Length: 71
Image 1 (cartoon, one colour):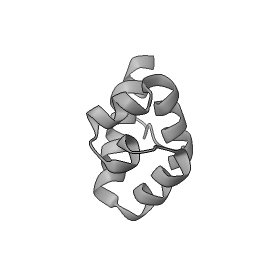
Image 2 (cartoon, rainbow, N blue to C red):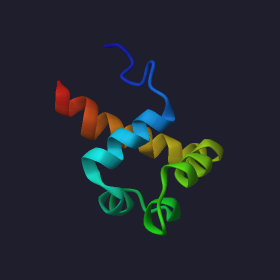
Image 3 (cartoon, one colour):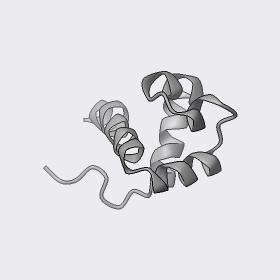
């Protein structure tokens, strides 16, 4: 199977998740402040880029909710 994240930027992953799930549900699934307190794509990208464990959770959520939904 090919890498479902290949060619995807963190920003596009985040935007697709926000569109599909919304900030509130994302904050429920991944309890991090940048999703729960005054969320924005800019603040979330800043946090996720410097926090590998959180980025991994977002990428895993993307694969579960977006990629597997398509297949």
